[in-house]
Amino acid sequence: MTAMVKTGSPSSAQHRLPDNVDTVEKAIAWGLEIMWDLYGASEFYPVKNAAPVMRVQKNTFKAGNGKRTNLYSVYLTVDEDFGRDGNTKEWLATEEIGAAVASNGFNS
Image (cartoon, rainbow, N blue to C red; front, side, top):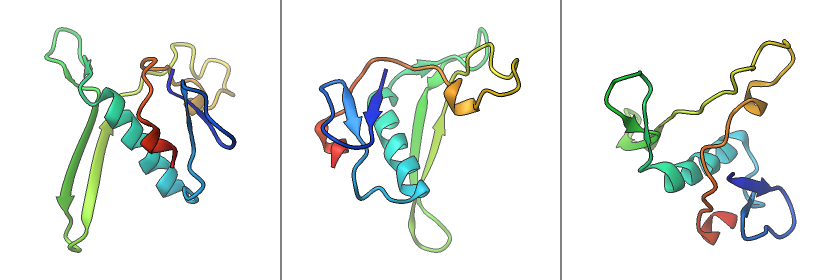
């Protein structure tokens, strides 16, 4: 489990959402960077009997507006029971990938 806390001091198995992460875009980028750091070398099989792909991929390039841009691809598995009750939020049905913890640099 890659656990996080929003305030206070994180335990050795948690990350704290930094105070300067104050927009949805920054929160998404922060989470994707942790995922890439922890699972960027992890293989995933999106199609049965096919070659594996990296579970988390990151490509950085200069966009048409001249700005550096990151493109992420992430494979997240959703619980098999998702959607059966009609009320479950998709992000709550997402399964954990592993128990890794990134460096403390992600806490600030």
